[in-house]
Image 1 (cartoon, rainbow, N blue to C red):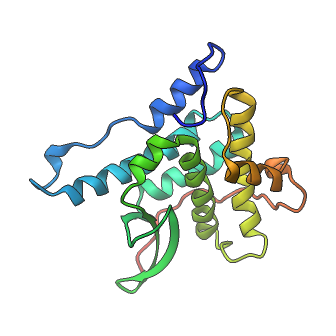
Image 2: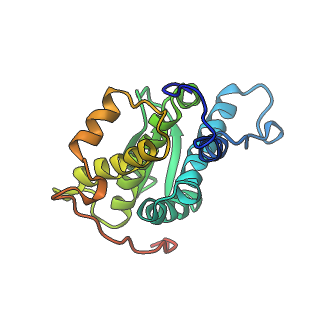
Length: 206
């Protein structure tokens, strides 16, 4: 994985858990139409996103990240938010669109996201957390608050700061260094507003 030099014993267990959880194989080719590479790629990307949420929920040792990821897990698993390939996007993009008369949250994923995730797992794990904070804000009707954008960035920085503490050999890229500089205390950074999300409740059709 990019950014790691060597694999000291102290780093190995957590690193193996993180990578194993994120990249666990879930695609069942038998469930897909024969000769449909787009369908297979779409399922691969959706499964990879789900793996990342599971990693944040159960492997990353941070209570506040785990709590957010638990709500996110329910929202994604119950299709409150959909995962979709494209349109052509450079990275994960969360949007809210009207679908069949209902406002629907959608995460758009680039077609090369599996390769992006293999090349720099922690960059994409951070992206899932940043996007996940947007999704949870959407669920709590707080997506458009003036303080929302700082909260998304602070969640990502919280993860990056933790990774740097737990994995001393990891080398953050320029984007990640800037994120940690902007939120040096993660979610405890001054003027970052953190709240407890309401638990998932199934949407009742109107």
